[in-house]
Image 1 (tube, rainbow, N blue to C red):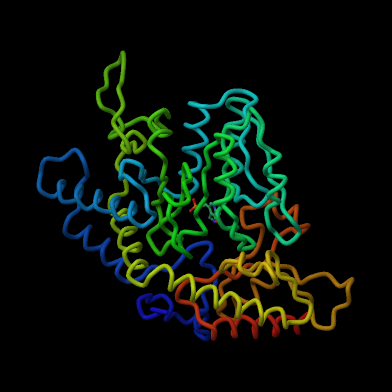
Image 2: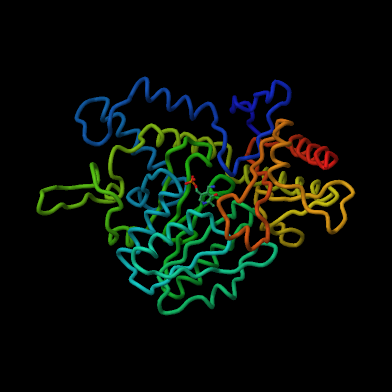
Amino acid sequence: MNRQDFPILEKTIYKKYPLVYLDNGATTQKPRCVVEAMSHEYYNVNANVHRGVHFLSQAATDLHEASRETVRQFIGAGKTSEIIFTRGTTESINLVASCFTQAFMKEGDEVIVSQMEHHSNIVSWQLAQARCGIRIRVIPMTDDGRLCMDEYERLFNERTRLVSVTHVSNVMGTINPVKDIIRIAHEHDVPVLIDGAQSTPHFAVNVSELDCDFFAFSGHKTYGPTGIGVLYGKEKWLDRMPPYMGGGDMIKTVSFEKTTFNELPYKFEAGTPDYVASTGLAKALDYLSAIGMDKIEEHERRLTRYAIEKMQEIEGMHIFGPLGEHINEHDAVISFEVKPLGATKDTPYIHHLDMGTLLDRLGIAVRTGHHCAEPLMRRLGVEGTCRASFGLYNTPDEVDTLVAGIKRIQGMF
Ligand code: PMP
């Protein structure tokens, strides 16, 4: 789908193999229109935003604020004041972990996360734990990577202040039942942060319909530039949270005695924002909307099913995450390990690093390792996995190339 919009996909790897890019979970490639919109801004509009009276500054400010409106529409938020530009999902989560805990949590209060979180949704809470003694509770999961919802309900008590879970697992592709997660939390009057890093690129997200209290995602995983991300937050929380960082743009007045803070969303946007990246992000979101998120979802789901089917035919293959009757809960991320040809039940799996390195020699880019989810690796009983993750431009032919590559490597051991 739309491969011609992504010049990098034309690349030949090691002067021999056409690039098969299956590392979209780490970052997506950029369509030409995103790069062109950014270079156009640098060449024609560039000036610092918000504080300038001159023509270019106002033009740059208009572009930056128009991008905020594009983001608002894309995720179905009610107000642009609830859209905060950050550097990415990590910064968005850290902002909440820092400012929400400061405003609403004290020693012994609890945050609920899940077994399958990315480190950014674990370590940020551990930093808060070190600062103010909060406790972290963990939703367990089944062996096939689905959250135990009964156990989740049992984690709530009078000290629970926040739930922070990922929408889609970056390792197993599990699509979590976030609507239920949010409903249950709200029944306990507890707000919810959704880590949307791996959902926003793959299917339509509507924060108003979800009714989540916070939602985080990254530009670079959504076909936009690096260095920009988004935190959506309900005004009722953001208003009562202290600023994250001090500096320009986030103030109303400053004296050595007392400083007052700017209104939302600027209270959380200290310093010069990446106003060119915001343009790039808006362009990327417009690009996705023009294709249609439903179409992207359908294409990627079909591709994922095809890949799982073909990979399951490989001898000695083990795929992580929901399969079989739960295949509908499996998004476009496939973690796997595979044994050598002719292996017995005691033969160890081929090391993920060997598999990844040898696939690379065939021009196939996958990710290997713990995927910034070490607690999940421990739960799965592995040190790491090999992960193929799809984007809108991947094709069944590329899946065939991956499968052929895995089989060829199997024969080498
Ligand atoms: N959460 C999840 C689920 C992710 O997959 C990632 C990126 N791998 C992150 C958070 C962090 O995103 P970023 O590095 O863009 O801040």
